[in-house]
Length: 163
Image (cartoon, rainbow, N blue to C red; front, side, top):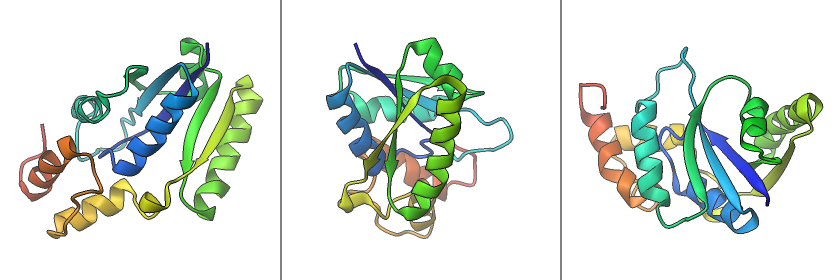
């Protein structure tokens, strides 16, 4: 049985993320979505809400589990019996950073990293860009999963932090 991990902050999850996860779910028996917890960084959505939005966006995938983690990703992989990390690459800039991480992760634990080229429909997407466009009233429909659209727009237009 092949288990893989798709890590990220998913703040918010985009259709680019969903595409990579769907493709990973066709390659592996079990896909763990590892939502990173960084105590030094405040996201738009709390981790619990990101997990809810991911769950609603990925409910059609039977072999996907969503969890949080902090610390070294390779430790999380080993605890789950995952043999590989799946990462989407949008551009050359992504590759430079991700290659260094992949090499370090392999050196630490021999966990491999599988790079998946992002679907060209989503190659320009990032969570940061989505938040910026939505904050200024731009149309992000079709760029984020349907369950994410309304909560994201509401969170960015609200003076209160999202719940």
